[in-house]
Image (cartoon, rainbow, N blue to C red; front, side, top):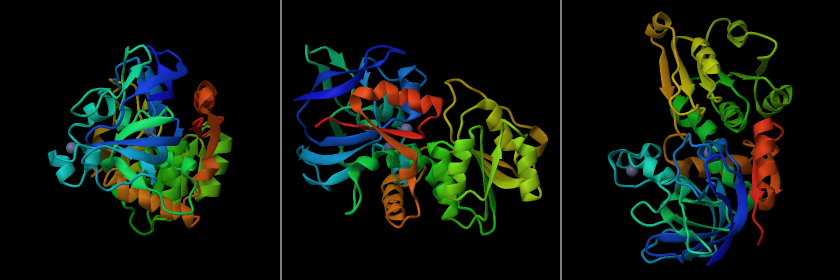
Amino acid sequence: MRITAAVVEELHGPFVVREVELDEPGPGDVLVKVAATGFCHTDGIARDGDLPFPLPGVLGHEGAGTVVAVGDGVTGVREGQDVVLGWPSCGACRNCRAGEPRYCLRMGELVGGGHRLDGASALRGTDGSPLASHFFGQSSFGTYAMTTASSLVPVPAGLPVELLGPLACGLATGAGAVLNTLRPEPGSSIVVYGAGTVGLAAVMAARSSAATTVIAVDRHAGRLRLAEGLGATHTVDATETDPVAAVTEICGGPADASLDCTGNLAVIRQAIDSVGMLGTALLIGGAPAGAEFTADHLTTLWGKTIRGTLGGSGHGQQLIAALMDLHLQGRFPFDQLVQYFPLDRIEDAVEASYSGAVVKPILTMPH
Ligand SMILES: [Zn+2]
Ligand SMILES: [Zn+2]
């Protein structure tokens, strides 16, 4: 079938909105009419080659929409159902079977292979030329996306589907880091470096946790104001002050936990230095491929944990469903972070994301 999609033709190239051909759903496939898709920095990272994905191809991994057709053998979703397109997993490897599908051992192929897990690409040019599909199992920068049932999360009544795609990646990543990985103890302190989508999701989740001190650090005053409104008890402007010293002052010593949501190597070090004995520094932000960070050896020996986390860990479907419920209850007001752009203005959305003008751009599809 003919669809409209934003195609990246070459490394570092622009998103070109044009018509492409998408397969009809085969065995195990689910065809989703995409309502909207968030733009995430990971799409930019893939365009620039720091996350391998064959080009030309279609990116996009924060989609939400309506199931319009299912292939043979598909159970669990039906036509007409509104869904969030979550992260893919193989369902069969050791980590999937252990209940950690975010750490699926076939994740590399699933997110960046450019084709179905054990099959061909679902996309091609209108002239039949090759085009990579299935970025994060969806390639949702298009009017329709081919995915699999196991990654889909049904949308409860009362929520606008076009808002929900970012729950699959950036928002689940930040919220899951707190709720699944950190699990803060009563009265604990958390410092969040970087008040973008991931960091602000962590702040909102921390507010729904037992942590009582939630510090947001950023270099944009506007984002710090946003963090305050979303539940940060303290904010630190890193352009004005040394954040590690500021955290120590606020907490009366090191923080119990820190989250780096920037991927900036200097900030990662600050996050590690912000926690003390038995503290945990969580690394979430995406740094360029091959990046290495440093830590002080002696203070790491003091029972410190430096831990990475991916996509919010745990069961994505359970987490995304919980975030939708929290949003309905007014406890996860991520709608404050978004701004909508039509698909043909995707380059404006990218620019707004990189400049910091918009926390979470969402691309709406022409239908
Ligand atoms: Zn797996
Ligand atoms: Zn993402």
